[in-house]
Image (cartoon, rainbow, N blue to C red; front, side, top):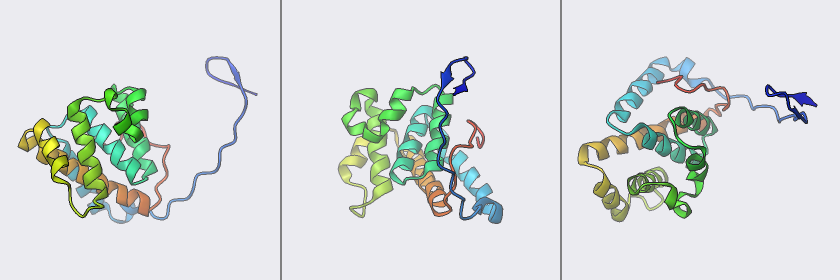
Length: 171
């Protein structure tokens, strides 16, 4: 038995070991990493921080980037987002009542830009987003979706390890 900070006894759990990252790309390409940080900061300009984190989490779920899911879930929680809305993101289309129409349009656009299975973003998805975002904000949203997809590619290719991120670490 292990005693928690609140004094309650819990059974000890042994977790599987963390995998080893393939490459610390930021260490070996520091100028690219710095440029990505600047691009990320520029892309978020003018966007609602809670909406932005939902978009980043959803793209990261689709791309299976565990590091980014961890990071952006923690940032969302630190920014006041509810656990319930974060948990429901993986099934947002069946949980629409947790989100605003604007957030739903952003999530649909995030999926279309991230997956691109049709080879393009469908007109209906783009038009839905355009109904909820003025053109400058829509341009920023598209940029933010593109940037998180780039971060995800670094994360999954290099097998970066989740669990060590502290909220706000890279902002």
